[in-house]
Length: 598
Image 1: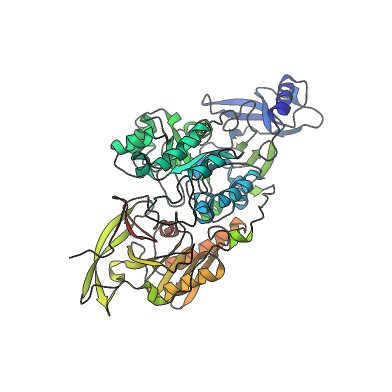
Image 2: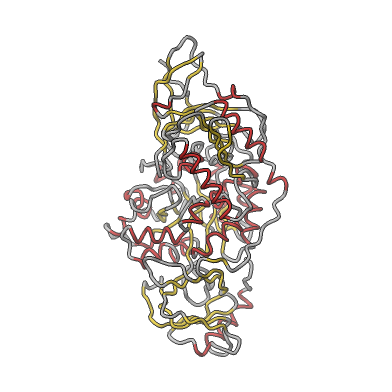
């Protein structure tokens, strides 16, 4: 990674500085150094840094100071390790890796374990390589997990590209690849699918970590079979019982606080009330959009939340540092303030409120007082990454749900949105028929949803219904962010607005747009793979804020409702979704009819 020397070069320097035979580059004096190994606070300790790594951590580093040493007085503040995000998707921030890094560095995040499976669905291994290469150039540590499931559920969706076991085996040799991304095809693993097991085997043969994703609430033999297949962690738990079940099987329970996922409070009681060993627990964000990053924070937000939920601050800090590093086999590299580790650290005056006052990464001051102090270099994104919305212009008739001949009403399967959670509910509603068309029903809070194919320009549109957004008037929201296949999701109350929104995203090359009463009310351009912007996070967040306001103006009151919108095609999380192949029953993993037969 950028800025790090080989061990052959750095070890003699570390030893010489610690022994007092050579001066350090940086010494921080008079800090309350937090040891996440022993869960202690050492008052008045010093740390010395050379070549981006800690050389000395102890009560007095005066022997490490030379004429050119940068000496920083901590003023009695706490010195804690830089924060680690154990599972996340950069694309969910609507930002390229460089701009995501620029957004989170001032919040104290210095290490991220990222799964770029969003871009993998659009651009395949080529897209993963682009994300990996930009990540490697950043001033903080961004480790890449090779995506495992593109498509996430074979036979239930069609992606722009497929990831193969051969792709996984190739990527395991890249310098920044830390393991396999979340194995979402949990039925495939539980049933011994050869492709899924081959991907896991390639990862384990390389001595790397397999990410998990068991989204079912049913912890039966399928769960045990899944664990036996190799996944080493899971972030899909929503209940205390989920967290307990995972750690009892030797998995790490990853508790997430993202923009729309609030799964920490319900699970951290496994530690705070049941007294389980906290080493088995990790904090992560999974999905954070740019508005959350700019206005609320990143891992510092998750850490504060865990403390507010009753966790001891030092235990919570372990869950955001050393536990994460150990899980990925990087305990000797990151996650603690100890000799030999990368000098990633934060000065803060309070362990609970956690103001992020100064951030160092690899011994360089990268942020202070919320201000970024370093450059985060961009990759030269090629045209093939910017021209990914391949579709035909659509007429409003493409968004028609045809009723059975002669029917006055029709019973439809409807996707029910659940606020602040990834699962949906499988609902049914009786809907009116007009001119042979099954109609949405604002009185019952039922809007239309459509999945527009955008990878191969097939012209295919799959229509359905969704409930829970509360939309009023004639409106439509369209997005080329459509986890995980990333076609285009359009939700609306008016077919003409749905067509206008879809065609607008074709015109701008991807993003999110809201149309109401005949005009565009908000647009978030996402030209990179239809998923990300290469503009600064503050600009993207401002555009996202205008989008959220436009959604509210059309009646939507859900918290972070756009995140719910973007997940409506995620065919690996129960109970019901939409894909380019139809309406998907995710409890049975099969395509089902939109309309219920009499």
